Length: 364
Image (tube, rainbow, N blue to C red; front, side, top):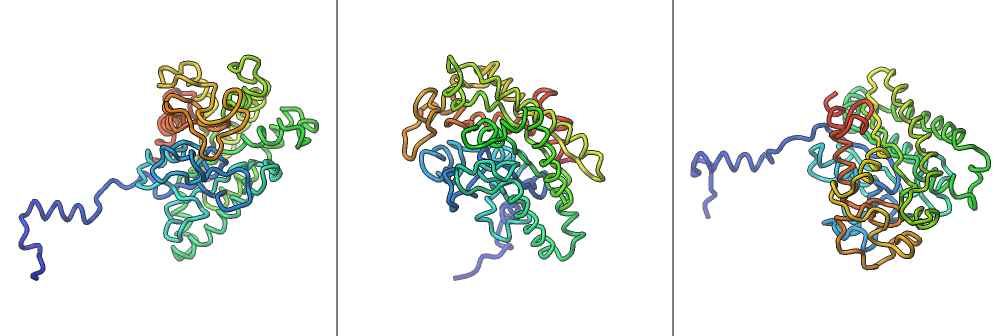
């Protein structure tokens, strides 16, 4: 059988074939994206460790093409939405399963139940606190140096990457506001605890900067006091958010904004704050205009607000998932994650970010 050569092909067809062969598509806006965080963005790092904080079973992932991957959502997480908006063809892979050829374009280090503090979430078993996630990143940096040949090339590459860091939720949910397990609420006032957390966070973020991160977005802690779990436990009417929790989180978030300003005085640093708390507040103010009808109940869960026990293996979730703010007792739905991801990428209100959104950060 004769081999077809290009001389046999009409010019237009040849062009189309060449375009297809080159995989012609727009490159991502940044060459790499690294993720640090907790269950809000974990995409499988806890799957194979001895942890109760896992989501690698149905109905988690019911609306995700690959099914139950370890994402604590019915579908996309915020970082999945962000990675698409940044122009990546594939979602950023979990560090636990990443191949060496994926390291240069970024991995996700996030671990469910993780906190800024090492002890946070310990009642749930194994997890990778932010300190451990940073150790994994430092190991990766050594591999990047090896792949690219020298430290200068690695530093130049990493300086172009976007890093998102979303920590603190569990330091409140699975530490400070769990007095039966942790003593921090007896040891510190909310103001003191926020200070202690912010000081440790600053040291951890400095380690990230010292290892090449320059474009860093810090995701503020959301309105944990509005989650179905907290509403089920502490809200008299099951609708009114728990002010004690939200006000403590607001104190911490303000300190994170201050950290952004401090880090932006360092050479080459471009830090920004994503106001997840304020974005959530705005959605709750007018859920209907965001396509949501149910804001106080999990789509999948058990008991009051579907929030007393979180989504169980093979439980049948609600059918109208796109109308729910929360997927389970603690975690937002794909619909909510996409809304937050969009506003992190392109701010809808000036208060959404400080000082820039991710679209702008990518261009700096």
